[in-house]
Image (cartoon, rainbow, N blue to C red; front, side):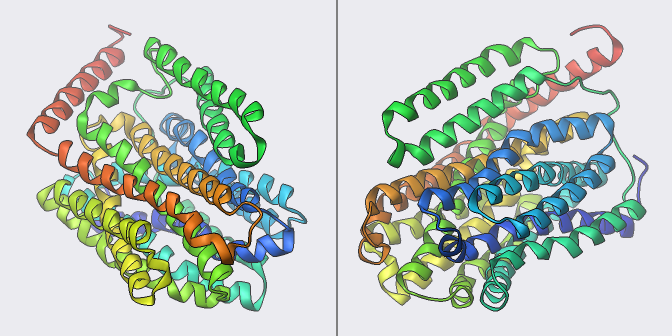
Length: 481
């Protein structure tokens, strides 16, 4: 891709951030609308979980395929296709007559969404080649998540109260159309120097692993062991199949050699943990504010501002810290704040007091604001630019898998605790095991942030990058496999 002017690079960043905005906004708006959807579509807790997890599950399953496909056939082409499919899926969601079709249309949305964020990150990686400039760009990228968290609950609450929950999907249409037109005009086409071959077996195994695992977790409270255990067995078999099959391929869907880098492996687990905490946090908070406190969607959105505002403010600061001092400090701040927030709810029932509820929201917002930039930067730093799409897609997949598992696990624990009782009577005690899961997630961010950002970890990253580069050179020369 030719070198672009500074102004053109900033414009490309803005266009890529538009795609992140509609995907992130879609999730935060949807959380505020859950109670309204529950009433109109007569959905139980598992039904609400599926409206979120059907999307994140398909997204997680297809992200790596989308990243490698974009590297092969062109990032701009795949990015624009994703915008079109996402827009069509959003329109269909707004017309869904029942819960089952809403879940199906959310999956259509996800097919388009899978072509957006990892491909956009790959475009950014290849546009901003200077490490410090790239870290700042990724900080802006993270700030967009904060914007979506700040605007989503308010905009969603206003739309749900004034028009109805279906209107939340209309938001994606004008932004998506603008992004398509701007991409067509200003984003240059780019692709990897050498095309990677598809890996259909690996793709099927990834879908089987994520799908079976999520189904087993969500349906466990209602379906019982007889139905759940076969799906758990399928998930285990798919995982073992991936570990056996992928290293034997010349160009695997998941390049397990990436994980020889301690920072990359740490970033992957941190992404799963951090976004599992986010998914569980939003799920519990939304249901509590509306179903227990009795707030309408707009006032519930206002209550979530103390979480969203720190995320918006801390994300660009985190990007600057990563660019100047590395990922260690942002990860330590993120892990400490997220753990402290979850402990407030798990030990001290923070929901029951306005002061502790506010403190819990602010702490979580600070933690999540600091966690995103070091994940993304570590995932793509040191990897050959030819595999930027795959490396970015692994990081994005980890985020979506984390969000999927967070909603699935926390929702299953909540459903087990409430049973047939009223949310209002049992919610706080039923939610406590879910908050303890979030404590573990925050602690993992803290511990792995410390362990995988030191000198030893950096040496493993350098060795891995050298080996990957040598392998790319050999393949390009036609010497080795």
